[in-house]
Length: 200
Image 1 (tube, rainbow, N blue to C red):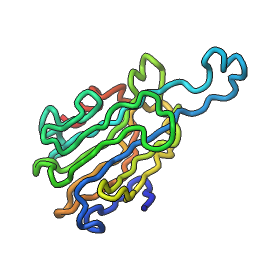
Image 2 (cartoon, rainbow, N blue to C red; image 1 turned 120 degrees about the horizontal axis):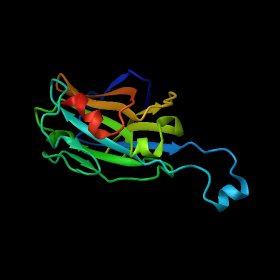
Image 3 (cartoon, rainbow, N blue to C red; image 1 turned 30 degrees about the vertical axis):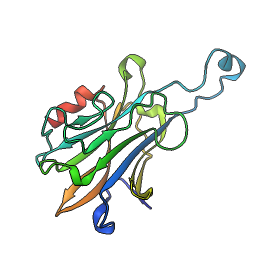
């Protein structure tokens, strides 16, 4: 398993020639707020629930959405080509391991899709006054679905104070191979609608 730094790339299929199906797992934890004590426990103090949503854009060679439905998220769990499937929404980020998972059949990704860009945004962040400075231990990882082997992991450890969306990484085609790039770019987009404007 390879731990990537921001900006690093890894070849997925060259080192795993039979790789056809992958799982991209994204995880995060709410930052524990200090204290709280007895009253905090009594009145539900402690960590606020932060509902992060993982989504994936299927982009063409120009970095644009090839089709309207080429955004896979909790409201559209399967891409039109059926090669990308979202396992569903986790509304708290509590617990270890992946909080949300996206399954990809690389052999079924249409020829006009060159990049799969994975993003995470905070649901209703403006109304809830939440941002990624309130999140810790965020990561994206790529797993070989055939044997459960983790191929690479990118820990998003930068301080993202005041940022509300994260472009975490991308799986993309290059010279007939599939690669993964660790991006880790944070934005102030308040939600998917705003984020999607970048890819139209």
